Length: 283
Image 1: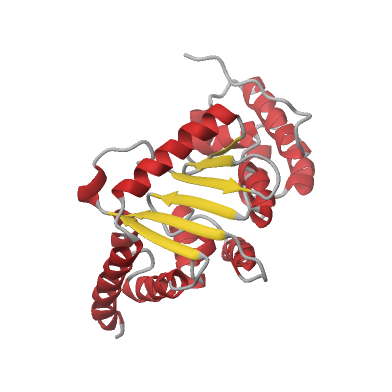
Image 2: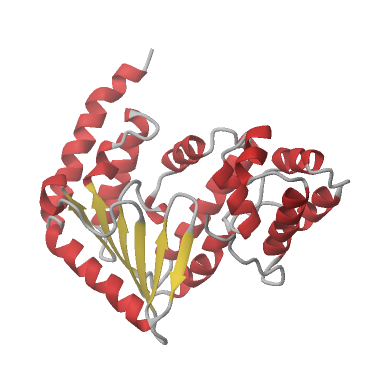
């Protein structure tokens, strides 16, 4: 079994919380899986709490405090690190987003947050965490929509998005929501600062970004950076060699994807399919 990842309680309040949680769990003689089963939540969530990548919802935190006999320590600490609209691991990336002059994105599963409609964002978040409270979901939806202001300024960045065909086929929220979302994509793709490409299943086969998303950001001053994101994790890369490696991967994805005009036609086709299905949702 690999050794537990070293924690740095001084890195952030979330890291301090995670360090405290791990100490209490170890003192109680519980594994992450055993603790997760008692709540119940996935043990991978416990791991993210301990690493400081995620802060538990209030009800989960209270349960952790009870199970680990923390005598209110976790409750008190949580009040200083309560969940923010964006997860801890993504905040450095989001701080850089408004400063970028160019963003190259590849999405394998969902529409990029900057181009999501409100209904699509809400449906995605609800599916991703069905135990989350309605209030918390609405906070996160509002935060995501607020990020989109970067595309509405006087000097918006160039946003070049490659979407895996799976993004168009996955009916998040159902046909009505998907029809609205794809119409939104079509509208943005006809603006001068948004370019859209579709990577069809038949074109690429296997590629390095099958299970996640990739963003390469360029700035007026300073080197490019890369952000890679999974389901509940993300990493900002600044090392020049790593950035160059992902830039090459993006070039290969661009070469395999359909050109923008044909991509837009594909999105139109899916849009019409969802519109045809949408009336079936109306009782």
